[in-house]
Structure formats: structure tokens, C-alpha cells
Length: 64
Image (cartoon, rainbow, N blue to C red; front, top):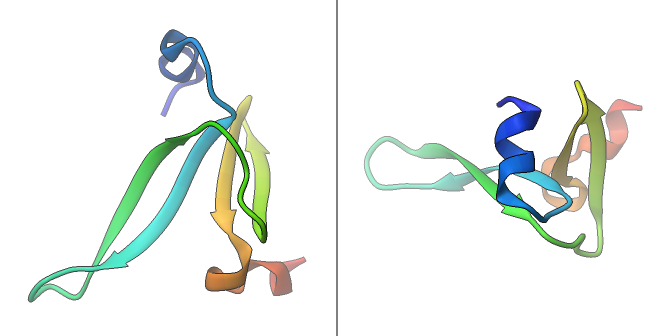
């Protein structure tokens, strides 16, 4: 997603990337705007866009 798309929203901290359980297919990606961090969130910057991931659920903390 381009930074200009996020900027056009006018507010927000970044984008949350997640996975949720769905019907027969099993899993689906979730992408949503974030206005504030939750406890345990991990934030990364890529090409000027903040990407937020729930570190407790994803196990992302062990990657670095």
C-alpha cells in the first residue's frame, strides 16, 4: 500500500496486519487502519508506512 493512500485518510498511526480464522478456507489476512497501539503490539516502518502486528499473537518478537 502506498504511503499516499494512508496520508489521504488524514489521521492514524499506520496499518495493522493480521490473520483471522474464517469459514471453510481456514485463514484470511486482515488489513486495517490503526489510530493507537495496543499492549504487545510491534511496529515496523517500511517505505514510510508503519506496519503494526500483535507481537504476542504472532510470535514476531522472536524474529529480532
